[in-house]
Amino acid sequence: MTFDDCHDFANLNPTCFLATMDGDQPRVRGMQLMFCNENGFYFTTGSMKKMYEQLRKNPKTEVCFFS
Image 1 (cartoon, helix red, strand yellow):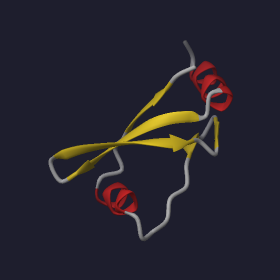
Image 2 (cartoon, one colour):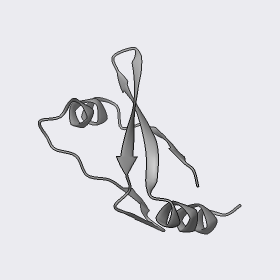
Image 3 (cartoon, rainbow, N blue to C red):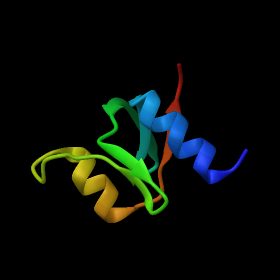
Image 4 (cartoon, rainbow, N blue to C red):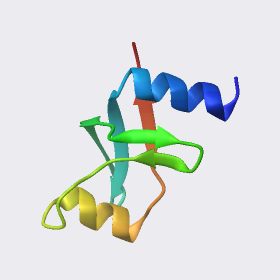
C-alpha cells in the first residue's frame, strides 16, 4: 500500500479516530478529516480545546480510518 492509497482511502472515508497524549494518558476522539493529500492529513480544532494543547505539547498522533 502506498501513501497515495492511504490518502485516497482517507478522503473517501473521512470519519476517523485521532489519538493524542495528555501527559501520560492517551486520549482518543472521533474526528472528521477536512482533506488529505501528498503533504499530509488536515483536521481542524479550536485553540480553546484540550486537544489543541495536547497537539502543541506532543504533535505525535495516531489515526484510525475505517469504511
